[in-house]
Image (tube, rainbow, N blue to C red; front, side, top):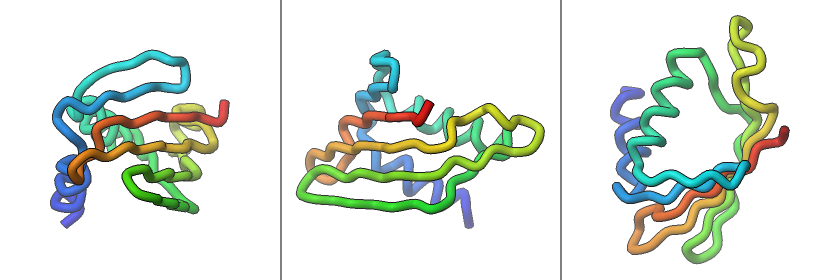
Length: 99
C-alpha cells in the first residue's frame, strides 16, 4: 500500500535529520519530512519527472512539483533535494526551490 511505501521513505531519514531550506533556515527531525508529506497529500501535491543521481553518500533528486488546481501556487515549479547519508540513513537534507 502507499502507506507502507511512505513509511519506508520516512524510515530512510535519521530521526535527528538536519534540513536546510532554500532560505537558509534550518530545522531538525524527520518528523518535519513526515509533516510535509502529509500536507502534500492533504493539498493534492505530487511529483513528476523525477531524476536521481547518486555517488557515495550523496544523492541529488530533482523533481517537477504538481500542484492541485485548488492550490496552484502551493509549491514552486521544481525542487532539488540534496541528501547526505551516514550509515545508510539520510542525516542532512538541503532543499533548493526554483522560485
